[in-house]
Each structure stands twice: as structure tokens, then as C-alpha cells.
Length: 119
Figure 1: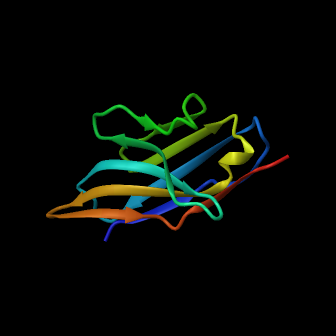
Figure 2: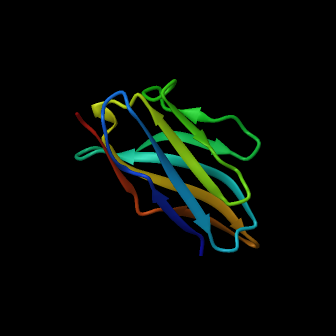
């Protein structure tokens, strides 16, 4: 199994900043892609940002210019830097990792971390 754990959520004021972390573990051979998703109360889960090995990041229009996804390091840890968050960014944020644990492929989700943007 590939385990994914998010951390870093909490309460942040509008216009502030917050960094979420996503740690993947489980004898991983390689991580092919990862992404951050979010789900607000009463809404469906939506894509926030994705990153592939050797590729450019992809962002939802609603977060472009404010959020930055990064990672692909030796610790298999990824980040979502949230700058100038807005109240509408309030949601549970989930990390998804698509990894190879040879010879198997895994599509794993974390348990989510709550982000609340409020003054």
C-alpha cells in the first residue's frame, strides 16, 4: 500500500498565507503524478492543482496566481502554498498520489485537512 498524509491545515485570515504538506510513503518506486483537491460543504470534490513528473503544474482558474504546488523531492513530500486565500477557499483539502510500487500502480488519497479562511 501507498500511504498519503496531509498536514498544515487550520484557520487563516483572508489575505494571509498557509502551506499544506502531503507526505507519501510505502516503499515507493516512483511518483508519476500528484494533486491537491478540495471539497466544501454541500459541494463536490474539485481539482485545485496537479503536478506530474517532469511536467508543468496545472491549476484551477479560481486559484491561479495565488496558490503554488511543488514537490518531487527525495522525501516524497509535496506542498500547496496558499497565498491571499479567500473565504471561498474554505474546504477540506485532499492530496492524491499516483505512484508505482513496483510492479503495482497505486492511486492513493489522504484523509484530508481542513482549511478555514475567515477573519
